[in-house]
Image (tube, rainbow, N blue to C red; front, top):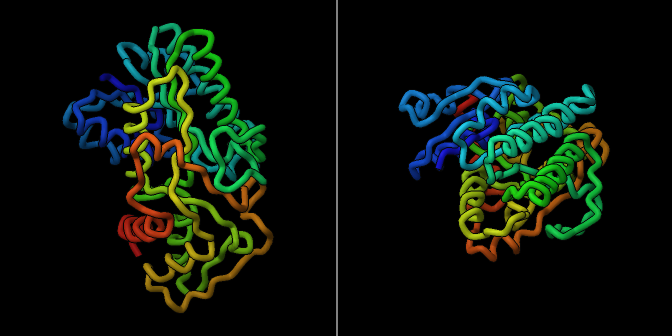
Length: 314
């Protein structure tokens, strides 16, 4: 298979590429390197297994030019910073919705028929039942990032219905692990590196979500693709449990050995505007394919903390 991976130099994309290359696929990466890091995929580039195209998904010509000879698109690129959308409000419109339109329209013109889309649990909005099944609705996202993911799902499903694409849409839990470049664990480590005596937590620390280790995530993607072959395949990908932000702070303090750090809270029930305080995905549909995760939330958090401490340096 010849795969196009958008955002392939990023966190999840680079791990997916590791798996694709290990099974013998050829990979083209389309990435503007705004948040991805070329060193994540440099070994594969040097070996000739990966071709990197530095391009912008908001530029139709860049996207169309990368589509030649592609069998399947893994569309993972997006704005990685949900909070940024509250300051620059067209960020997710451009990097999410318009980028996804450029992908599916380029696929139509180049007769590429298969797409995998990285969506998110945030499309469900707040007050969804926990755990949240795929058929919960209506989906009412409360962040601009969530709105762009829902719009991307709609574009893809309409291209499936109108132009005969086959799609796998995955709504991710919070994905964490080796090579992480953002998120709460990453932020906590940097805060403790700057000041080992205190750790600021946004909100009241009671925010509670499920966390999935990145290797479990990409293995889940490929397993479900092999075991679900509908024209439109929609799956949650997550773990069996949740962890609170306070528990994450405690684990990071333990792993950094900053045992004297005082955990301080900014207050309020959410970390930022558009944050969903409590979320857990229903994963029965994923499990029904025969796939299960290796890490629960807390184990994934501790594993990630150890990896990122080594990568960041503390």
